[in-house]
Length: 120
Image (cartoon, one colour):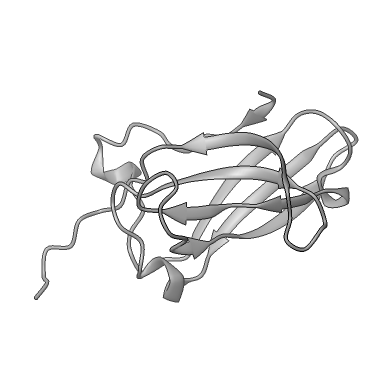
């Protein structure tokens, strides 16, 4: 695949995990094809493959001559809901309603989230 990201890094180190309640921005570089803003993208968070949709990233685009950068975002309110171990992928889809998946560019099989200390 021609998708590159620095996430996830070593998730055994708590410092590399996401903090629930902080805004999330994960950068993914697409190193092939048309500029990324000319294509359609989606990224869903789920507890398991084929599980129900839990959250959806907002995706910003930054074009390059070939491909470009996608920034997957969750605001602070959305990130309060994330759980350690969720998974997500990045798909290029058609502009149809409902969209059809053209290609899965990237997949993260373990979302690292710092565990809460205080809880009910």
